[in-house]
Length: 196
Length: 235
Image (cartoon, rainbow over all chains, first blue to last red; front, top):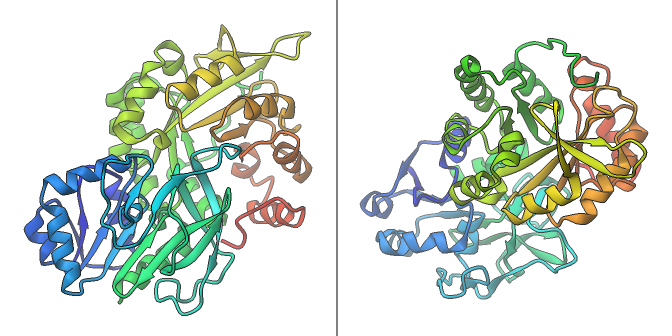
């Protein structure tokens, strides 16, 4: 069972609709008990980085860490991926999970922000998430902050410099873009996560 | 004239799915009837359309309050577009943005050239009422209040297929740091090239030319890509 974590921060229905479309067995939950027992976890996220404080208060952070420690695959989407890093300039006092080093930062001033719209990916070979997705494929972004390129980066995007469009390390996966809004390419990426 | 000649193109939910399959990057559903009795129909149409869409879906037309916006989001919209209601009460932009994120709020502006001037006036009420407000000044306020994008329609060009108003588009695009979607007048391939290059639009919206089969979306995207405009193709 895939658990989509509900922490009042984002369009869960879009994510669930997309998962239903690819035939995944999934449930939306805000219960740490359910999350801790998940076979896979998806953490969506839209809006402000500080919304992740709800995850701390509710015991969901601990439940997620517990599941990930026993090898459960985890996919963070948008703010969900940013939270996998140490912190974000958007809410400097709010700690991220710290699974990847670095802080999420703003786009350079000369660039319109948020970065909204379709943009193309430079994908690395060998990524499980991007299997069958060629470099140059377009996905949909809407974000004001971005994660740095790190050793776990498997897809990059260019907008005001290169940033991490996706990270992947062991059972940890993160995507800055919205696969549930990225048409056929997005569905394929979600499906790859679901069949792991 | 341009806002008053309306033709029935068919079921919006089916059209939305068809355009998505043809390669549309986003779908915008604007309820132009926007009368009280028709609200329930709109929500049902949104729900049916959303079921088949896996690309961004914006809904607008007569959304007057946070409650009405919530009903539309619950039915499956990713963003709402507000126009007259935002002019009447700009705090609505902020209130919807606080609840759903500013990326979910598009402020739509209907703009008409002021005769003999290189300036533009914002209209409300489906393009019927001049507001006396300059479009650039209103776009800046909308941005300050938390709008995620501006949907800018040239009333002079709308429905003509004679090309977008690039002067209008670039003056607004240069004035704000949020994306500007150009609307009104999209016709031949060159009109789209112009609005991206000269108009500095971040996106372009067209309706009549696609609904009535006058242009094939896939052909247009390929032509734009060949002209060097960054374009999602193939989809």
